[in-house]
Length: 160
Image (cartoon, rainbow, N blue to C red):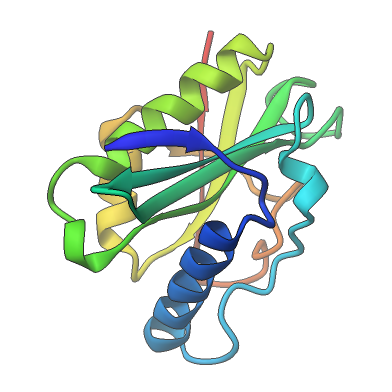
């Protein structure tokens, strides 16, 4: 898989976001992920976003965005992982781990020392990926859009 940095508004990102939102609607019911995401969140130096291509087709994506110095976060240099997704047709090949490794590497290079994320209990594959990559439970109160949702899981990892 070839990973290419892309603006969040890029047509391939828009298409993959549509796919992941459809997956969320099926998995959770309702409208999908309603957390606020702005294209500028992922522009350097405040963020980074990549799309993964297999044979020229966009099949994976993910990004991080700085959260700033907020009370309760593990560090003033914390960023949030958003929109991690791998198309069903290429799952099981380790592509999510490739995207996650790129996000961690680029975040570390940008001076980020903690990554945090929200996911849901039904997303067992995502939870397994993150936990096997060193992410552990953290308090999501300072940043979490889904802090009051009973199925939300808040994970984080020190990049230090």
